[in-house]
Image (cartoon, rainbow, N blue to C red; front, side, top):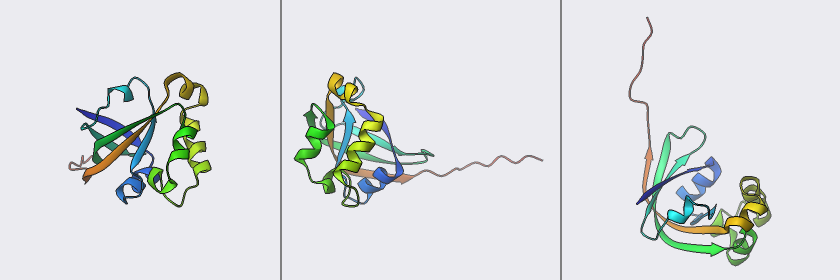
Amino acid sequence: MEHEMKLQEKYYNFIINGTKRIEIRLFDSKRQQIKIGDTIKFLKEPGLNEYFKAKVIGLLRYNTFNDMVKDFDISILADKLVSKEELLKVLEEFYPKEKQEQYGVLGIRIELIENKKNTITSVKFIW
């Protein structure tokens, strides 16, 4: 099965560069559908005109993002340019603690399989 998710440019580039190997999300109804072996198409924000595909090679369940971040080096969750505290702050902007407690969180181990830049192929002229 193929899933689709959006990524901020910074984290998109971390995956492309090979540092970020675990995508972190809330374990909501959308993420509960993800299985090992599935493919995820990640779209680069804000324009959504670039994407890569990754194969799901592992799933990690935790109660909170803080619990997950304790178990892994930042170089696997983002990049050494980011602190664990900074990553947690960004995650909690999207998924407040109440939502984490309600659903739990998911670490998606990924392996890059396709990287494409989409380009506009048609131009409309106005005379």
